[in-house]
Length: 181
Image: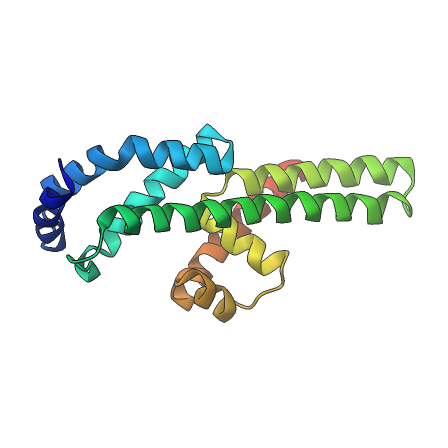
């Protein structure tokens, strides 16, 4: 598929043609995956971000500009997702380090062990969240952003942010319930 052929696929994609979408996915799959693997240095994360890139393409298909490069559009989406992923990882590490340092000094050995177990329990719950839920959850709980601020930053509706937070909080609550048993 050459660049001049992509215009026809994009036109059909705008009309929700799934075959054109599949053709575009096949054409760009390996290039975007390699790009994401390089950016994140994590093949599993790259696979997730690759899927999310193509989901965003499908979700925004009707707003595509046929005169613009679909390749540039896809790589821009992928780059933004990778940057969000990297930012998220830095926040998690920073949060966990800060929480550990603050608590260790003031607790007895038993309290330290219990605290560490609770941290691990919460961290595992966060790690099992989907990328979207995890990002929203951490932006709210770690960065202290409001639902409205998160919605604006991630280009989501406030209702979607609320839904993601409900899922995230439920997952943490379930993990803590299992821990307390």
